[in-house]
Image 1 (cartoon, helix red, strand yellow):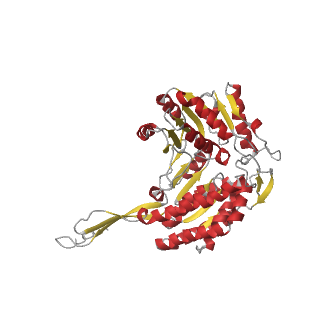
Image 2 (cartoon, helix red, strand yellow):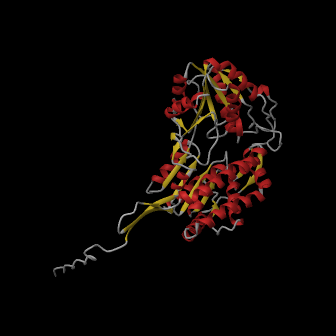
Image 3 (cartoon, one colour):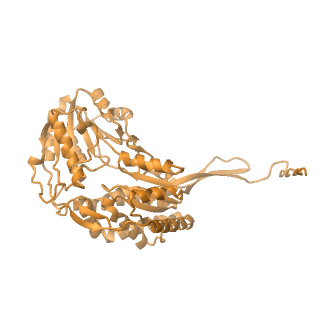
Length: 478
């Protein structure tokens, strides 16, 4: 029986059962049957169901949020905000988008014919969701899939396995048919065998680049299953000489250290124009030192532990390696009173005198550590931003929006922010380039992943010469 070890104190917090082969098959069969029936439901009832799911989840928010905090270390205020702000906003927006996004694409009138493309549900969707934003990441797939008329199997990361059960319970309490949204606590082998059944219509994976390759190979092995991959990131920010330095520093500190830096689109490297470099670094350091590192169940804590000791050690190793290579540490563990009950706590780490020879500036960190690098101008800054195998988001800070948009055109990323960072707008497509993955969620385009186009070409009247007569069948020679 797998155990979830809490990073708060590195003690067992929860346990759960993995599904056996027979139970995986039973839940898959139930999902397939439910999907066939659910596709006949009207969109208004599906929208009402997703809205009801929000109310059901809210009724259990205190217990749900505390469980998330104990499972992965997110400060309790942030666990609640992930539902109250992020999840509610996304579900509400997706429900509003659904009627137009799922409507038939009707072609221009043509005498005697009716032609349109319908966006049909794919059937059963498998959502392999990550632990760092266990509600937000999962809801990006679950809600569009349900709105489109699919059933969903939710395979959550083992660290936050109980969140899949939270979703299943909330949908059932909202009146969903049995099998519409089901938790699937499985190991890697069972997941691969589920994919091999060829009974899935779409697979969404959020996780590491290595994990993405493994899932994609399984999907390609004797299968033609559509997939979406949200993988790693090394998201950069470029602060130009005309930026509001105080505003940029405050927001980039939040972008770097929120959720202990464990965000796919969190800021992991910063390039600052020489003219404002010193002022920016001073402001950034001041804001970083204001964090309160401690027990995430304490409402005053603003930075809790990382998800596990291995992840914390990885960040400490990147920082030590950068310092050994010549980087200077301006903020670190010495500036905070770290809890001693667990080795998962890592204070904000701010380093300067960094370059791209250091892993801290070139490889994914996924923790509360940031390198700040001086650049001569926008040309050098943009080149360094693009010097990465990743491309999820990029952030540009300038008072000139036209300049920001011009630079954004050449930034190699799925989303480019100007004077903002570390945020997913549900009205915009969420996608990546290079090793950050492919596919799309959120926005009206996100519905395309969980539907398949079906063309209808209907003749409304016979031809001028009347119906064609069937050709006589030739007799076969004896």
